[in-house]
Image 1 (cartoon, rainbow, N blue to C red):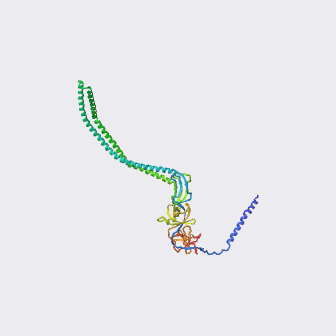
Image 2: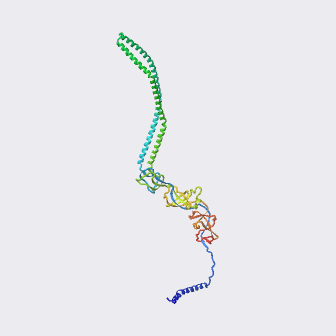
Image 3: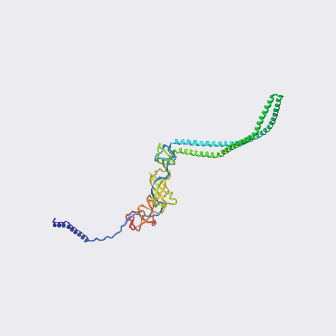
Length: 480
């Protein structure tokens, strides 16, 4: 491409369009600036038509609407206290039950054998106690008899000793006589010897004299032996007397010890009897506990066993709750706590809830001792009272009637801006007021109103009850 053709192309495609656009812009600006000016209109403030309400400060008991769930204050987990097989299961989950109703039955065959054994143990100890009492009576009688025997034996031995002494005296006298007879026989023997030697007497007479002398000598020898043995016999009798006395005293001592130990043996047997009776009571309890019954009127939450299962001590069988202990648990927002935390923690405040076409009356039973870490509120527990057929865990709306609040205004919800502002109309101008929400209230006409309190609010004040998006202090309004 030549230089001329390039310059021509540049002028026609670039500079020429720029020149045309610049001329058009200059002409538009010139025409705008040269047009005649319109006369200025006067500025008029807009008036907003609104609805208003006259304030009337009253003493009203506010209501608040809360949400809570049904809980059971008394829940029982019935467990087996024995090891046995399950023979009956009479309930299912969700069933309503009555106090004393038989829920689950366990096999009691083994336990009845143990019960029979415990009864036999009790009878055995009772028989041993009776035997001990009879033995003590016998020992008391035997002790008296043994005392008498001791005295009799001593008397007998003393009589034997006296008899031995008398016998010895007699033997001494008899010895003298026999010695004299020995001398007589000796002389007769010597005379017969002389006569036989002189053949003046037959030999038979000498033999008779010899025999008589020998007999007398033998009798004298025996008498001497008897007399010489007298000290031994006396010693033997005295030894027998002492031995008999000691044996009898030992027997008396043993008998006395047996008698004195009788209370201890009775106490020991009674202790064994008490233990046996306690074991019998345990056995009876085990047999009774094979029938697991309902401790109160309630509903079954779960059944944790089945027919044929073998349960052990401590195994859970049934879980249920008391329908008399049902309560509604709801959290009270922090702003309402000052009105509820009275001297008795708000106990007795009335509330109500609606469920399945029925209104239930509630009563505040207590407030929790622990505040919520996330919201700062406190849980309240409302008692339903009586037997109520509401499922545990059911979420319900509850309306609580608070204590009467003085000098509060009942306003419609449209009068409240944000959480804590209303507008008062003064000389057709809005004036913002800070308020505190006290609660809700249903008027006699059935209107649902919000109760508020403000130190600046007075009876007769006119309050804005229309929601304006541009509401601000000083805004001109016209109340209709």
